[in-house]
Image (tube, rainbow, N blue to C red; front, top):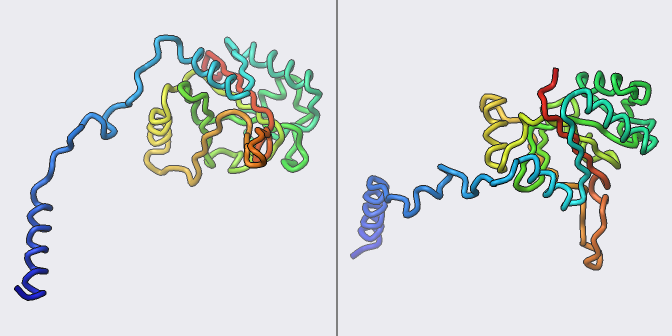
Length: 214
């Protein structure tokens, strides 16, 4: 059999294989459903437990009024006077909390950045952010402290659910960057010693509001 004949036989087998689809051995494992079961406890509780375990600071707020009180307490307690915030809605929240005079556009010189997020993932204690907001790519990682204000409607159980939420929100036109932040920045690259705040914020707060924004 010549080289050309052997090549033709191989191509025939390839064509035949392509025309006859092979059924998936485990069809239910190929993205049709989440491999994780919904937790028995409330999603808020699981997110809080995971986020705190990752050295994050979690604050639960029943409504917008409690958000203002908690935010004011955190700002005054830390003595922050240089707060970076690029989102108009959150600027109004800061003004209502009595911190409007501390808002700055200088990200490089700020003490804390305050942002919203796309979603919170309960299973892993993760904040999901994108470049679609006024904050762009840097606000949540450049400042030494990151404060994220989120609402119960943004809380999902798994990463897959968060991605589906983003896909639906942007109608298939996904932002150029989707990032997942699980607590403060941590690294153990140097002598296997855990150091916090090397590649991102050393402190991360999540203020979760039960009711939807007004």
